[in-house]
Image (tube, rainbow, N blue to C red; front, side, top):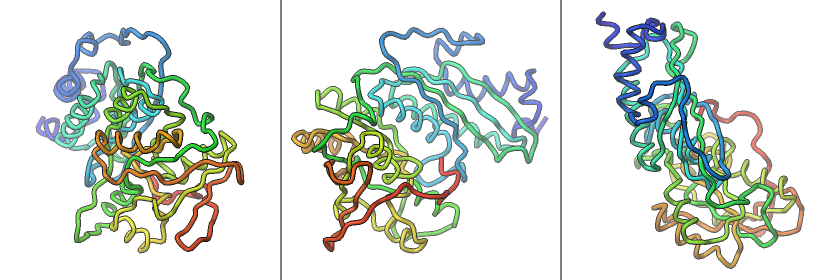
Length: 336
């Protein structure tokens, strides 16, 4: 009985008293709301108008890292996918696959962090599932979240990028990937480097409320900035030119990139997004992001033009240019 109070056991997934206690004491306590409290096989929700629908699974290693944990990542990641379609996050489902022996205190911390992250966007978990697998069949805990949101600003699309658009990043790049690398390698730096993992809905909501023009938005997760820009260039058949000097990169990320031979624009972010907007509105949009996104490092990093359609061109400080390709291979597996 003592072990049941300290670590997840196979009995917690058996559908009996132990499972009921785990769900009530951990998940219902953290995610409590009237819909979830109904305890039906499916949640009853009301949707109106066009909606966005997304799902994601989270397997990050380690589960806890500077600036967050797998729970914060699961909520922020799914909310951000909805936000990038200008959809107000409303309802989430959440499923846990838990390895036998996983510490209950860690599970409670993860659930509480998820609850705090949900509060930032007024989103509710309305249904879920819990599975427990034998020790050695998983790595601690995996989380799947699915989200539904109401679209408030239509026609945002990777195919909607237009000639002359300005390209903006909402903050410095590569920080999540660098933070995970530090956690795995046990590296210490003179100054603190934390993941940029964050809920992006508050700043996107301000952009929508400000009646600015938004052509495309995308959070730069796996593959980083390079992946986003290449996907946009191909989907809209445009060329995207980036000024290397304008890229916001912290000294810590630069140092880790030099140490491991990485490019900052290939590393993942979990709280930084990229926008394509009309050039004449770019300065105003940048100001909104800096004010409500609380990131002074947000910057206009490039523009769209007709040369080399389907390509991303990086203009260096020395007057030369080079293509930026999609990242190849897996630089850092299981970063989210």
